[in-house]
Image 1 (cartoon, helix red, strand yellow):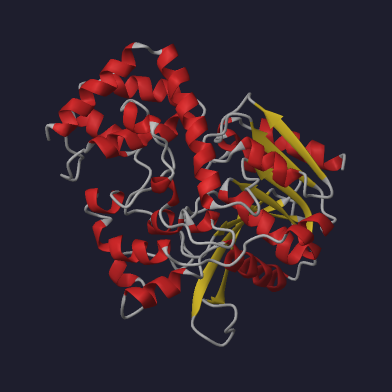
Image 2 (tube, helix red, strand yellow):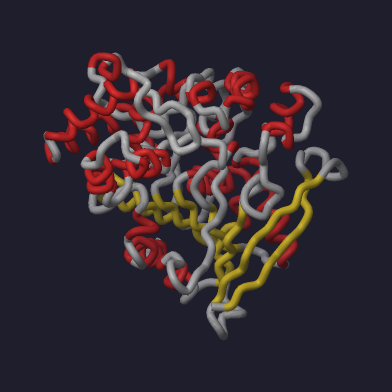
Length: 404
């Protein structure tokens, strides 16, 4: 593989092209001799995660397959990686919490798409293709809404977002899937339900802590259910619960499964905002949590943030007031149904039947809006399939798109 760095300055607020700017970074990856192949822009999951790094040791297999047909652009979306990352609370521009919240309004999919358009123009490309994983799929739908004429083909993996629905609808649906995954897990490992109860008893007694010294509270312990939405996640959870919960190994391994943390502020602060298609989120996942989760403490949560997360984790505490302000923000629309219907772009989309993070039925409903789409609905994989399937998922999508 050969790599080329691309860096350009883009406006923080695209409505103010002469205003403050931030740096945008993308790494071009291509095979030797692939200099004339068309571009494929990869939009990673998140929000707030950086693009994967190519490596001869553990580089993603999908990248090797994609590079046989494309020059792949691994974009660090604004605020991530080498693209002027959003950091500690005091590093976020703004003299007060309102100003900082205003700054962060420019880090959703609509701004990312406009960054991409500037990058496309910078490279002198008329049209290119997209590969959107999870949140990257959401961003691909926004791209189809705003600038479909710039797109050749779109591939989506676990990222056909609900269009025109509220965050409440989205999180209510993912709770149903998460509860089903928990019950399926306990049928497979029936002894683990008691192990979870025992660990929760220790957490309530104040006997467990995280590596940095924060108490491991029952809420934090129950937040690790997202692992069940990944390929091989049930095995990983079982091997964790086999350990003594008071051991350092248990503490370190469990912390890696807690979804919201200080390493990735955008994921915590804008997670619900990136589902808000014309509304405020108002701590949606916390408000719509089913009563079953109060009745059965062994049910685990996934990507379901709550205000208490920012109080129980010391590294998130400085962001607590900012998170409250953002939760009350009325967000503009991310998607345009009419534009999606009119977009004459082939879309091949993997829809995972038991996806814990993106509801299948909402994805199918969104697929029905698209003019040229091939939804591949499968229960062979989980949400992480692009990374864990080797070349299989990306190869299947490339084949499907050629038939459209």
